[in-house]
Image (cartoon, rainbow, N blue to C red):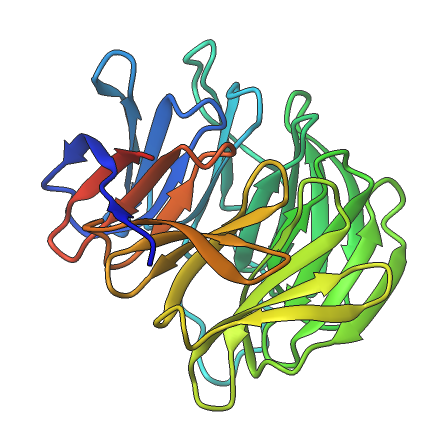
Length: 312
């Protein structure tokens, strides 16, 4: 039986009313918190203080570039009436970008979009978004230009980008089909259907050979499926014994998954064997969780309007 370890609580942020999303920069310095009340707060881990507060509308999603120069966020959409069609209803642009390095004024991407589902930055600071109008858009934020639109057959709710930017992975919500696109030209490379009923997230392994999908099975239980991309083969399903998984992420060497359970434990799992090799206990987390790229820093929140930063 593995000995339980305790992570180190580095920071506890309180009184974060109605916060809706959290993110961590690749260097673990910046913790970004967005709220349904229309604000974003940026916590500086080095200076141990808030470095900036941004006032906006209700925050939907946040992305931070790999070089930590850019922050992008999308606002929640205006309400849609039952007789309105998503594809015909065009709202004001609601994707904003901020240059963090120069502490410059934020700017809006001037493209009429529908209901942004997801935002991701590539390694070279291209911003990728998916929306309910069945399109994926790729932006160059430095000159504020839209580089390309990728038409999709289903609504894409989650994105992942291979770290070398060869491929863009996407998954649709209800039909749960995995799409792999060539990032440079937007052409569909391959696709296949999963057996999950509702998708939650998707992520590439660091070497780009594997894909991790998260979703709900027929018993409405959260599961993770590990896929071989080239063969479209399901390698392993993580469920059950890990006590209702909340989040999972590849370690930097692709040999382990970092898994957060519902019982406030974090397990490092050997991918080849499916066995836990290290377990951390007493991690206060009830809602959202995100890890730094090296999996040594974890940011999570609870139901009492608090955000915690742990070192593993």
